[in-house]
Length: 284
Ligand code: SAM
Image (tube, rainbow, N blue to C red; front, side):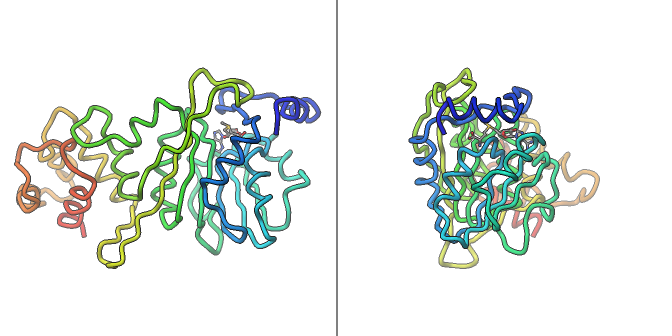
């Protein structure tokens, strides 16, 4: 999809790029194809796309189908969703849901089978909630491929003991291996965003030893958020207030001690594996 085609589709369907929905449409086929290449999608995969827009990625994804690919997209903008539903490349096995993804229940977009792959040129204004929701609700996917703002990458790949390290980086690390694939310049979009973008992939970690595999749940994500709730306070303090009402006798200090950590440790000092172990000790 090049810029002329984007403009023509918008004009002939009486549509406009809406900044409130973070609409920057890809208009560079080379980039679109590279995104689908790094996603590893197979001809018979079950694929979820968040925010298909006017279908730049959709078209490239579905062109790899052998007829058995199951494709689901969630698009917030009714005009775009209606345009896509009627478009010629949408076949029998493609479903377009018109909804705000951040507000959807899992059962409203996941059908009989879980997704193998997730792809999204993420609307930047809701990047964090979308990635977190996908890591919780679609964590059996083999791989997730996202276009994000270049500046946001630091928060996704942040390491312990850094300012950027927080719940998003922990959840990404627990799910899989994060790779920055390539940068994308603003002129590959219409309208042009103000910043550089980048494509990242998250490949699910799968351990041969079943016990080492860990599925992110909403409860785990909330636990990690609680650990970071007061960044200047110790982990013990943060968890103390988290459990105060429901489980005041939770053996927090002894769990921290079992991990070989100091009672003064802060959430930012913990590795992703430490969070899993602490959660297992306290809540499983
Ligand atoms: N995938 C298209 C492309 O690459 O050209 C469009 C990407 S554009 C950056 C983001 C898309 O996400 C827009 O189509 C926008 O309407 C949609 N979107 C924004 N917020 C959304 C939400 N909360 N749920 C679902 N879709 C959303």
